[in-house]
Length: 90
Image (cartoon, rainbow, N blue to C red; front, side, top):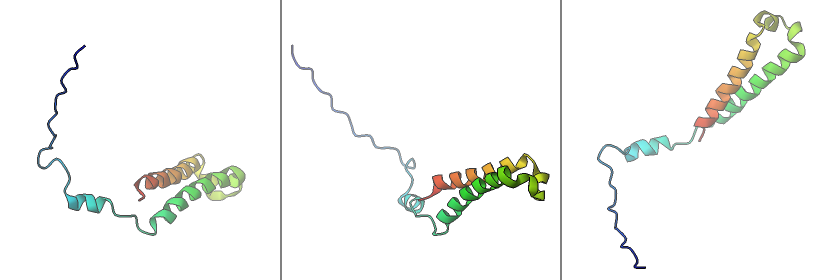
């Protein structure tokens, strides 16, 4: 059986203005500040600690008794904030 001819594809060149400029790419690749990682980890640990304290001694702490089920929102909110920060960390 004869071999088929291979067609050459033209090189794709995107239109002007589609790709970000080199200045925008350089700015996007900057590392996070030094305080970013400790704050990120601190928020996750603070949320975890808040929920653990609520389970263990929540009935003896007046603020937690007043908040009631909102303690879960506070704890999970802090953890989610830390996780969202981890996606932006470089």
